[in-house]
Image (tube, rainbow, N blue to C red; front, side, top):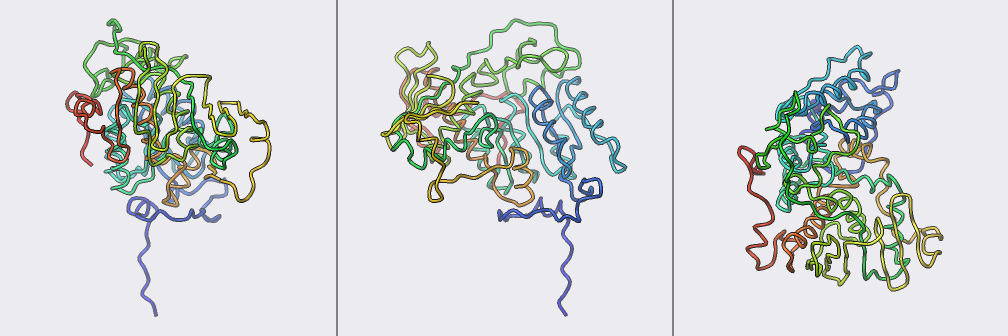
Length: 434
């Protein structure tokens, strides 16, 4: 008679599994009569950063899933995190097994909890890499907003952390899940050769960020400003960076400043350069040469050259415009067109390229956590796409040609340029070891 195997809990499996296999579906018997998974089968999630993106897009999605449960929220702004906790409580309050949602000022409190399976990070960009790496080291799966990082070195370290600790990570490049438009279809058409061999891509997004010069203002009550700054240089509070009253009606403007973000290049650029990378089949590589425009002050015209000769140019109509030997194709949110028109009108044949079809960006993440497989915007995809943004920004900031080795994540024979891969950090927020 065979010896019985010891039972393995869901949490132990998620923490220790090293396999990235075919997805497995939850058994119907694991779902309760009200459609909710029992507590033992739910993936528990902690939210790190509860501002505008989290309070809308992320909470709207995650609170609609019956097989996950948000158990903690974290933000240095008291108002923001209390609003998030109240929304969670309103969703789960009728559950007899609901034990509340904790709120923290310091993300490390979430990282340290062994009962949390995964974290969703929706902080300003300069606060992405450290929680990503520490979460991986603690055995947690990760969803991190785009752009994945503030610097090139951070992007490389995030890949290393996810791979070493065998985590499932989704980058918030939700256009890969066909949010806002038929982006996957456009990439399939291009990779199927519908407009021939691609020679040039124009990416229409905003320009680079600039150094912060905002005046000092009276600090917002309930905000831990030192924690909000993190590794960034010490400077006085200004509401442009962290809105008063918790969540601003327009998008917050910290994206405009180099200490915290890469401007339009890493904001919408992290979406549209990402689609360009996908269409070009460059998810594991990137450009090898960076050429600044004649007048970098104009904030457009930087060129990135790939080893196969494809030229990517910053500037042009919104979204991506691909030029091939047999035509052109343009993709943007709510827009897909081509010349000739039949390049996009004829359905894809069975023998043409068919890319990974996501069931929705958050749903894909959750499914892949259960199946231990890589999602549609895996960590390397996010890292490679943000690297394109960073390289383009460096062309504007330093106004000189650069040669880049995408496999070594270093500039070629250029010690000065390699010093730009990261920045001088404020203690104690040094980039963690892997």
